[in-house]
Image (cartoon, rainbow, N blue to C red; front, side, top):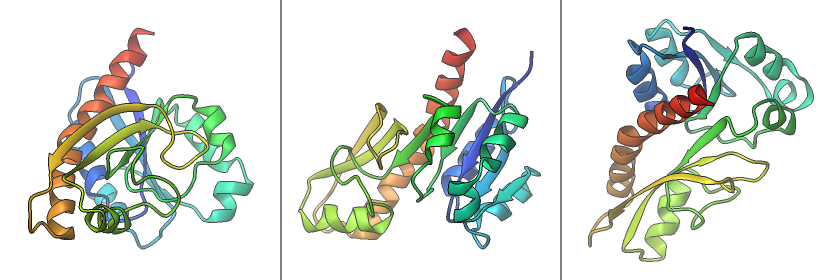
Length: 194
């Protein structure tokens, strides 16, 4: 049986991408087939190289004005697209080509602290400013709006008195690294049985 094939989109360092690459490195049924980035200097490209996974860097024009990315992913027979710290809105041609097959992870409990501009430290700053007692992560399907698709999984953690941005980020990343690869795997298992 052919392995299910994963494409990872990332814009930055790629720590979640790394966890997913590690998780599927010797997996019997699935593999990371390609890593794509809109940032030629992102560390995720080095991580992909370390795992001997091909990568593709694209610009705004290629992403929004051509079908190159869709064509590439179709040619590679990609089954699921995983956004791991990818900050651009997904264009309609990609959503249509991979319906309910694009997932994202968000560093807060959606629908709170979602939407345009709400990524990375911006999210944690807003959570701190509002004196929240807890935060967490949300894994969700991607649609045409930022952070708006159907929620697949949420995990939460307590914000203790004295927690700063770095601590909140750390607690969130622990949950991200623990759950994201498992959620990807469970979605691929469901796809197999369809």
